[in-house]
Image 1 (spheres, rainbow, N blue to C red):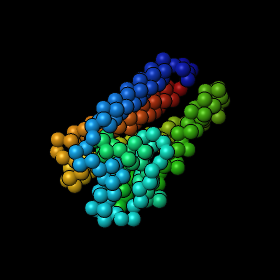
Image 2: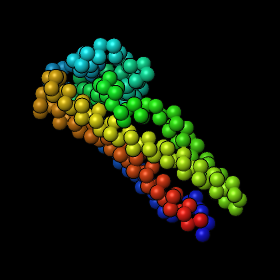
Image 3: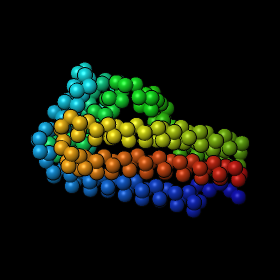
Length: 232
């Protein structure tokens, strides 16, 4: 049976993955939209809260910068900088504080030498390259299916997709642990009161779904390709 790029199972996985990602993104937008309207009682901005949390762990050398993007918040371990979007940097809502604390959680992971974060950081260039080339290799394998090189390209595409899938799986504990740390920090530091933490939790839980959806889609696609190659 020929190896078909647009075979029904692969098309179904692609559509299911797109649907999951769309649903996860909707959950993020919905949760952020709701809790971004609820101002914290203490009134700290995301930047001020992040600074407080970092200083409490003596991470005085970690800088906080405002970015220009929307929800482009991230921690840069190479430069030891928290980069927060304007809505989070200046925002005083439960959503803003939750996101800011999450990024502070990554800084704490880095300071502690959290193994999954260290691996993800070192592996990122490989995963980024693999994510760009695996589909090209796969298509070349289909086009040259009748030749020996076709099999080589198919195997190469599976290796590349395996590397990217590994990255998505390692990302899960990194992100979930950062969110766990964030919620503990927010309540323990007094930035949020106990009844306010739930709003931040909802936002961070929704964000975690996007990483889970990405990992699920990658795993399912990889399993399908492996099974199809075995049938050749």
